[in-house]
Image (cartoon, rainbow, N blue to C red):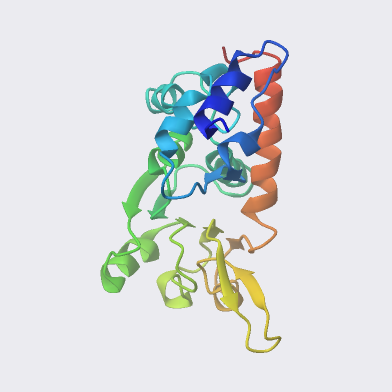
Length: 219
């Protein structure tokens, strides 16, 4: 059987295929989820940059960081689209351990001052940054990492986290983000739920990228 990289190369070389299917990257809404024995970077770079609708090829990441026309990764584009539609410009933004951080930081235009923290940043230090932020973007993979005492009144909270936890009420597994949604929503001026927040916008941005690639508007 051909390897995943070989399949990607074959599809990229097929002139009848305009866009490499996202499933060939084994992606879930643009987030890589390959098994440990597969080199994610090698797979991403095996996809032709002009067909890379997920925006993960090294050339697309590099062009994005250098402020050149590029295919922006769908999740980063989704967060920026939400910010543009809901938040005023000229704000202070705190990012908590977002995967592929440069994608979001370089996607945020305007006059935002961006501070990057980590899931392992001590809680008290993390709180200092998030309490100052007009926009808090979190994708740390830690349920209820962001609590109501960590957010200032009226802040916009964008939850990109995806966590599967056991629901003691139903006995089933449920999907939650990284924010204590029920409590933080009482204080935040704007907040995205999980599910139903960043996820659907990510799908929309992936379709937008597909259109850009098909019409060859970037390359």
